[in-house]
Image (cartoon, rainbow, N blue to C red):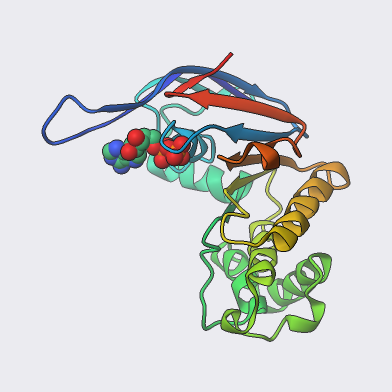
Length: 222
Ligand code: ADP
């Protein structure tokens, strides 16, 4: 599904030549895998995830998605692909705090042109799936951290993406909630066949996934 060849990313800096966050990285991820991208802070994990999730472009190398070279896609082409193919779960949840759980899950569907009724029905179904049927109407402020992240997962699934990207999804959670979120990601992968790509600096969490890709200084460590 994903093939990166000699991928590099250099961030421009005002005072020097730029910072090389990725330095010629090769990576393949098959459909249906549950992979963690693991390594110390600053090694380039989020940079890689942003490229894989069509949020950013590399400065060198190639990114093939389902055998299509998406490396030089325009912003517009990338955002279409992103909305269709990628769901995101963030460490800080990135939910709208004053809206209800249901409204948060509906938003990405409304952006894609689904009508209110369909979006409400699908949001209810997804919130039930993540065990929050009874908290649908609660505002995000009325939910615990673990519950917020479950809303985050439901929202990421709203447009039925082919891949789920999770950037330190349990970083703000205690160990009990953390375990629950990991279980949920594993279930989505095992039962739902979802390709799940998770970034973490925590090797214990990484060991719960099927494959660990270790990154060191912008390269895949061997
Ligand atoms: P990780 O997710 O592994 O912590 P990142 O991918 O966020 O690492 O960052 C890799 C390196 O690139 C870091 O040294 C970081 O400071 C640098 N970096 C990230 N984003 C930018 C940016 N927009 N401009 C300049 N440097 C950046």
